[in-house]
Image (cartoon, rainbow, N blue to C red; front, side, top):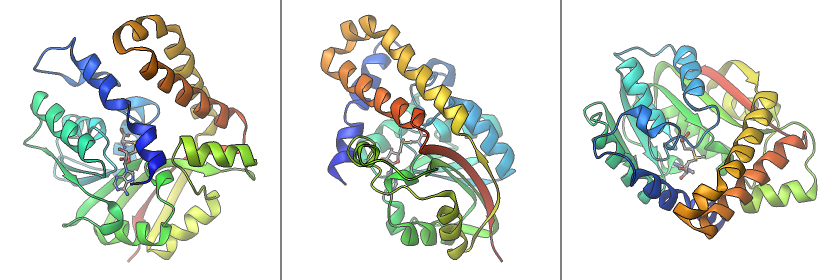
Length: 268
Ligand SMILES: C[S@@+](CC[C@H](N)C(=O)[O-])C[C@H]1O[C@@H](n2cnc3c(N)ncnc32)[C@H](O)[C@@H]1O
């Protein structure tokens, strides 16, 4: 795994462990709030994905880059479907399994540790991937693996960063070093790469203003609560979060980096 990705995620689990210390052994999804979502707009984003994917209780769903599993658990609880979460980082995958056991959802949600670039066994009615592909510059391998895991007519839903206008050198550096995003496609090249792999885009939504607002609020909210966090988690961890949240807020306010939701279907 690339060094910038390790750095970007290394303080998440200590923070989560610290927060979990105040919670009961048996957890509800409400207890976890947004502690287990590393995408934007929390469960609202997942509700939109459920609707766009048209998944039902009978669906087999793959969550690509599952993090600590918040999306997979929410899908299983809301819809009653079977969800497999694929996650690159072993320590995140293990935490995803632990939280799923503690929420009593292990019958419907499983997690596999692995890299989407080397594929995953099985086929699915749908997959979704929230804020993951920005870490993966090899689009050809990525989308060909994403296509082979879909059953005929299977659907997909993506939330990701896109390039709206040429990036400044500073933005390029921040994206590569702090966000572990070494390559940022335009919406047009994003769609072309999907189509080349047989993934037909049905529609997309530019969510840049929504995300600008959300990431800004997240940064300010964290700043407001920092005294309490510093006491509980220590200065290093809080400073790492503040630095990251500010970098993301600055990127979005610059107007060159945007956010998109893209959904579609495997082409016949
Ligand atoms: C911003 S987090 C989003 C996690 C989750 N989708 C969520 O919304 O909470 C991105 C995740 O993608 C995972 N990831 C990055 N590259 C991956 C790859 N090649 N295969 C599988 N997972 C990957 C990272 O380890 C990280 O957990």
